[in-house]
Length: 258
Ligand code: ADP
Ligand code: MG
Image: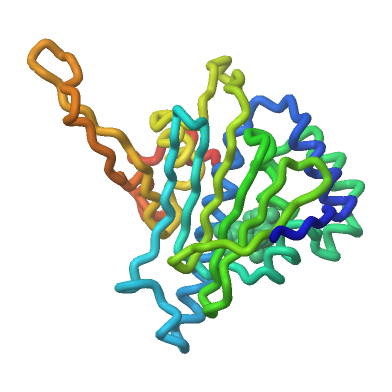
């Protein structure tokens, strides 16, 4: 049984801005989802300091990125704090009170510069720049049931009871057709190479491993892929080092500006 809810009017306005955005720097959606995953991990680690049974297995925390080029989906998974059903409704669908007050100014700025979205506390909705359907399955560390949040950004979202064995959050983006980016290249967000580049550009310093599922091929001596030898494995795509702890010579101009 799924329950249907309406987005708060302000949220729907943000969604419409994202859905109809002609902005060419849509890749920032991944920075927002990774930041949320990282925050959720920090929260779980903090809670687990006093309630050790709420910690992750072996105290191992991770963010996983799983692209599927054929299905044109992208999954972002974390084993952070997760959300109860009430928290999902409160956090994804409602705007913080401070946000409501400054809403008109926020909407004006977002129209020009969607990349500022994270600063307004509504970063999650940037997913609708690249996806026409978003699903969130989440299970809270506190032991309550898992829920599925689902929306196409058309004014409503649904929440359904879900099955999820591990604590944390799994977000699935159903990707829109590829579009041109700032460099005038056709950008496909289910491609490993593109994702790796975006992670390194915006999320390299995130202090948890960002594990990108990559496909490894084996080639014969003529350079042809050997059938049946292809395998998929996770590859950590970020250095997890703060910029100021690295050698200046190792820091690219782009990273420095970022
Ligand atoms: P902000 O991160 O600035 O609060 P967002 O729109 O990015 O704004 O996210 C809204 C809220 O949704 C977060 O504050 C958090 O409570 C919740 N949330 C989003 N992603 C996750 C996640 N992966 N795990 C747990 N909670 C999340
Ligand atoms: Mg955020």
